[in-house]
Image (cartoon, rainbow, N blue to C red; front, top):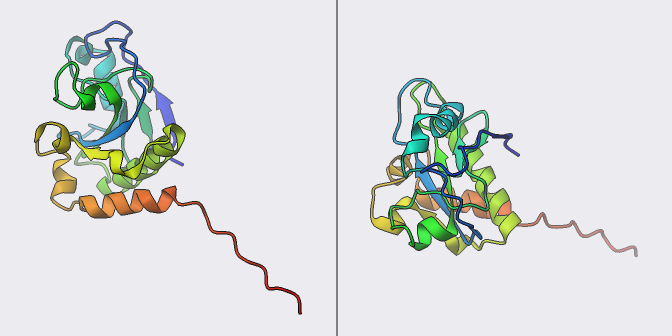
Length: 176
């Protein structure tokens, strides 16, 4: 399982309004930030500092090393672009996949797949409720996955589904 660390945005800030969230969906994003150093730590630090004054946020930022929890899983994050009462914002956990040029996109995406499966099991979220940012407001996001980098959406979902399946127990041969 991917390592998870906490770098929570300040309580009561614009990016962390404190509204209660009972997760029913998971929404996948790419950060849109290919700058060197724009890894998960950097995205966590952003919401703790200047980003706290904006109405934009996410629950997790994920890179090839770890997942950084920025908004608690039981609180709303502003990520879906579907309004203050939209289903995406109010009922969905947001995972941002880092795409920094000095990072490893495949590693970050693989960690996001692990995190997604973990959260889906934890909250009993069905696979049909795994969404792209695009599904909430038509934005071309996660733009890299939508281009097939490093996987297309169908492959991303299939990899999550594979992790959700319980390992099958081997049947022992019957004694004769």
